[in-house]
Length: 264
Ligand SMILES: [Zn+2]
Ligand SMILES: [Zn+2]
Image (spheres, helix red, strand yellow):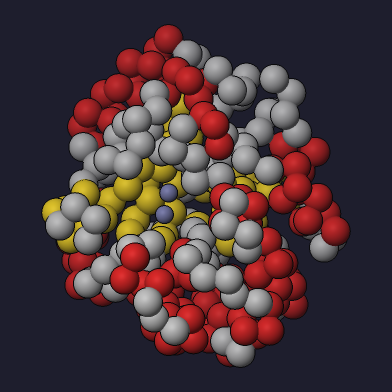
């Protein structure tokens, strides 16, 4: 199997325009896209709702042509206020993988410029509890995505992150208790420069007994497909981890990291 990137967007997400066919060209194996579901999205002031009927129909048609290589995924942007709307939306819909993300606090998205005006410690004091609530409260998700989304706009040192060790360990323990995978978001790591923060999280997660890692670039175009996966795999191997978790029909499968090498 070539690289399997478990966090990617197509034109079914409002902030992306990539087509499935281009992603299919990147690998000989299966692909999955994880499209946005964000109720009350501060970027648009509207609900960002994946058109599931159209998404499924498009994938069914392409799967007939491309040997069933496309899996269905969704990136759930969690807020407490939208909990019920998310659950209602998911009824009767099949996804191979559900990513769980915290992008916003009900008022603003953590990538909006207003966040940059705040103190980083205040932002962490707000964001990490939101992350904990999301993993505690959301029942069906498979992967905790980009734990650092809330601090992507800041330069945070490992020492500053360690001040939040207690709550972050609770987040990781909940990921373990709920049989979720912890995402190595390679754009966070190698584009936003948070690889050292991820390395700290990997250490804590392993100490707590976690062993399920998901690799996702968060690509919005093929330019980022499998972004720095070799480096992420090397980091896992440095920590004695030799498998990556992928989901099909929301069931986990462990793949050896050597299978993740690009063979295109
Ligand atoms: Zn996201
Ligand atoms: Zn995403």
